[in-house]
Image 1 (cartoon, rainbow, N blue to C red):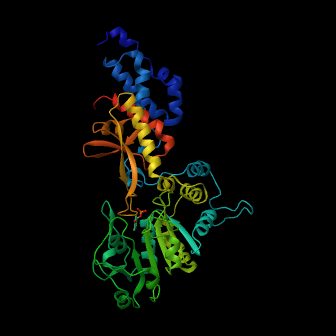
Image 2: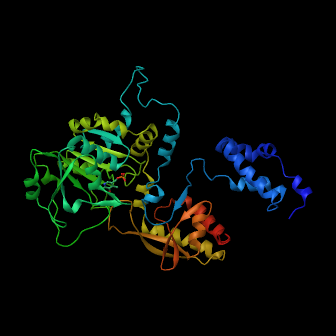
Image 3: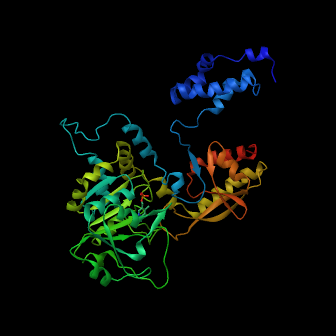
Length: 436
Ligand SMILES: *Cc1c(COP(=O)(O)O)cnc(C)c1O
């Protein structure tokens, strides 16, 4: 405890706020937020928990980590698209685009003529260039919004013909059939859990059919006695064929041969494809509708479309994702297992040399987040004792790992090699982190 005299030395709020690091924090977090942590630090000094000289340092320690209310974390889980970690990591180009469009911008204005222009015409153009089989494109908030717009616009009060084996739950209780029915569309199930034939669809399609929907089971695999109907076969049916490919792969990927892509589905005869923008496409959260001009235009003009509209930030980040350099998601998928092993070995050796009980090993990473189920991606990890997991998770920067057989694995699959030094520093910091 300090005596009363010393407590009188507690610096006044305005003086603390005037200290350069805290003045900078006011610019970033706002005066009220910074004042709150300064008051709390003064209170601790009054109680004798810290010395009055440490009020500034204590306030700095208690500042929020980011002005956005979200904390940046490194994804060392070995799950490339982790829904809890914000799925795809945006490219530098996309991050820059977010910054550029953050002010006022020409999202719905033609600066040449000065009159209102089509919203985000350039993003639409980039999509059509990336998916040549699509005649028209529209962007909404996410994959679920794309499905809601399709169901409402094509089948409200009518039927959606859907295979029983494709009545899927995507995650966290999100069930596609429930979403579709919430729009007022009725589901007409065809086939059995494991098998469906063209004849099943043919019998179900009639005057009350709004569309035939094929949903990619993006988070599980059915094997054994199974049969599904290909898009090309469905295309003969007298109803619009919509394919929810889920992951947003725009063209085939050599490493993910079983993953459907937008261009192939449309080229095979689908009238419409829906997908997410923040899975394998590697962009911001968004939902894409790609397909024939009459169908996409009809949905784009539906009153509900206004409620599902994306903002300038999403549109610009998506444009940069489509036209800019390869995304971090694509880079991870391209990574050579040998290179990953060498990185893991290098980090483990540096740690071991400093006395950290680290080893390296080969692992299996996954795409996750609703993409490429069952695909095992050879990867490599730095292995640490299990107690590093909470320390790394709570550290600054935070590193999310996975615990396997009593060890904490730092899987390098989803990490940029440029971040390796930061990961190394985080492990050193975790070593001395106090128990919470
Ligand atoms: C992920 C997924 C969705 C939902 O997309 P969100 O962007 O998460 O709304 C819908 N269908 C399939 C097949 C998916 O994989």
